[in-house]
Amino acid sequence: MFQATVTGLETIEKDYEAFMPRVDKAIEAGLFAVSNDMKASLIQHVENDVYDEYKPISYERTYEMKNRDNMNTDVNGRRLVFTYQFDTESNPPYYTNSDDVIRAIQDGKEHGRYLWNVYKRPIPPRPFWDNFVAEQFLDGKAEESFVAGINARYRDLDAKVTAGATKLDGNESDDLHGLPEHGIVDD
Image 1 (cartoon, rainbow, N blue to C red):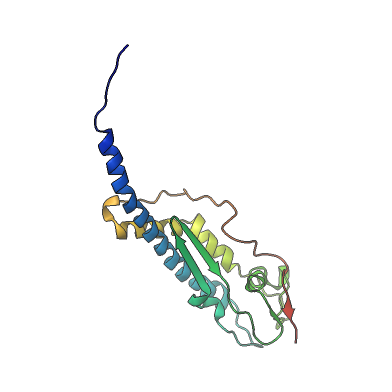
Image 2 (image 1 turned 120 degrees about the vertical axis):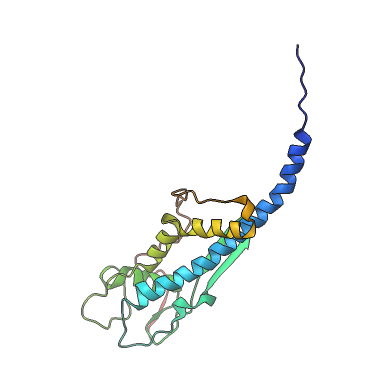
């Protein structure tokens, strides 16, 4: 029977323990970069895909949809939670829930229930949320932001984007299509 010993295992474990706090800080920096870039991207989609595509004539916009304060992020360890809720109150009729506003805008008068019936012709769908999610996750913008944040914190980690590595699992977004699920104020 043979017996062998390997030296250096103790230092590998110490190196690992010393290295991992840097990785955790780099991940956190990457997630903060993602959260900032996601807010800027959503604002841009609201401006381009919603506001620029349709000009109301019978009501005034509140511009709450592009208010950065309505986009909240929570970075906790290796997790980022992004929430988007805005005040929907305006002149009646209006939806009581921001998800219903998103549904109406995304699906337009042709596909959903559009409260602001100011034109005889259908209001076309303006899928700004779908465009935002596709840009961030399918087109790789979130990955790029994440890697940029890591490299800004610790350049020597030399993080790189792996194209096409992000896979949507269905937890990225509620279904923001179809009829409203909450109340409407009519008067």
